[in-house]
Image (cartoon, rainbow, N blue to C red):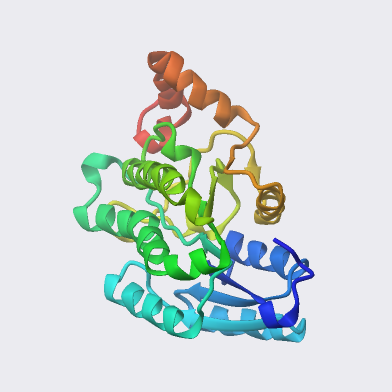
Length: 275
């Protein structure tokens, strides 16, 4: 990723969930180092317009698209618009996500489907749809996955399933397109201080009201964005947190009974149990 690229070869960066949290932090981090046209995708028109104004004040080229990524027709329309507008895509950041905090036995199929569509189907469909542009630019796909894709997190069955699917799909995809010059960076954070948790769904589709339980350090989106940029510049293919959540992932594989016992204790509030 050469920030001194000539104007006539200006890069195109597409970022979903870009209006706040990690998506906005990634956008700002990239805008400080690279000359590019930023394509910001989010569900909130009002927030997108605020971000558009902020970037234009910094003399950054920007386009905004209001899209509900849980709507597959809206995703198809977005892909068609981007293909018509951009012949090359240097960077696609699949950041948009949604989670739930509810027991699997008390979570509606509608919630599970929505979590799966936003976290798995939308990134896959965007990547497939924009593949010609990614190939033309020898571009990179960045997927914001989660340590929940590597180990169970109680009260997040649908989210864990979606992130596991994302992991498996793009591990295969990376190898299949390696000779096409398209790269993939998989990012596996533990817990971040972003709106995804504030907006977590309850089992009935409303907003989860109970306090979340966490494993490992809760990091800021700015910290995470800098880690991602460093990983991109070093050509890394995966990023893992160096904290207790990574230890937990290894423990789950080596001693799953012990890991799950500890997890039940840590998440007892969400399970509705006492010590």
